Length: 186
Ligand SMILES: Cc1cc2nc3c(=O)[nH]c(=O)nc-3n(C[C@H](O)[C@H](O)[C@H](O)COP(=O)(O)O)c2cc1C
Image (cartoon, rainbow, N blue to C red; front, top):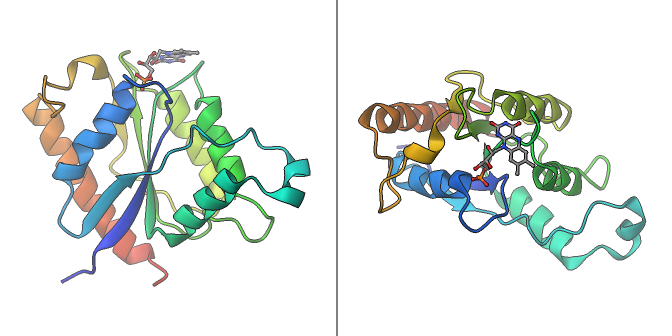
């Protein structure tokens, strides 16, 4: 039996009613038993400024420690202006330092992009993947997850309402569990 893997879920939206956050919460019960998904907050991370490394903000340290402790990272993000939201890019930057000791390095990753629009936040998904290459995060290539029409995907209880999408997300998470085992460092 595979060991339980701690998956840090990073949500690219900060707003309380975020569809991406609600999708992230709906993913947890669809994951295989070997994956424990928990959201890691990014809203209290001061904008990255290298000058602050001298007196590292406690929120940066807590975030870096949390990502270092995780077995894998799952990004669930909307798209802002055909890219990832600045809050998510800031979290990537905060976690990437100090140089050579980045928290992301080597963590198996996966990306779910979310939009009410039809393109499913493709631009955010792929800009994020570009950064993940540099951060040494092996990001699962297939299946890809571009969730379009996402404002209509959840029911009143916050579950995925559409059976086809629910099954797709279950298979996505099962593939991610295999990907984690293939790329795990411990
Ligand atoms: C600053 C901004 C830029 C946006 N740009 C895009 C975009 O490029 N593509 C897109 O599909 N939706 C775009 N949207 C709409 C978002 O997809 C929509 O607001 C979505 O609900 C945000 O995600 P959230 O619900 O998780 O907060 C944008 C929204 C904002 C606030």
